[in-house]
Length: 69
Ligand code: FES
Image 1 (cartoon, rainbow, N blue to C red):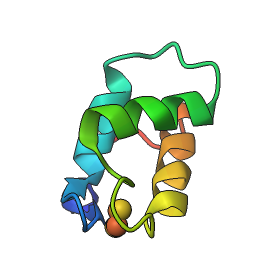
Image 2 (cartoon, helix red, strand yellow):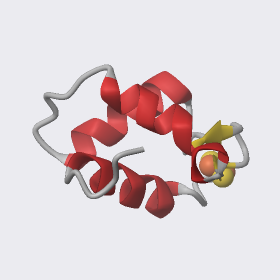
Image 3 (cartoon, protein in one colour):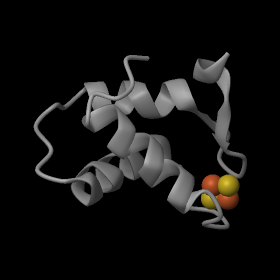
């Protein structure tokens, strides 16, 4: 299941955790602002940083409505 897909292995943050964090606040002005919020809530991308691009991609997909997870 994509929802359980582990996006950030360092901090054990799943796709669902990122989606949940985003859905707390729909009023982001841009992807980077959303990324900062998701990072603060889930701590994803605060370890090795290797998941950074993956997290950004997922956030932009969700914000663009391309993904209805
Ligand atoms: S995999 Fe996310 S910070 Fe290392």
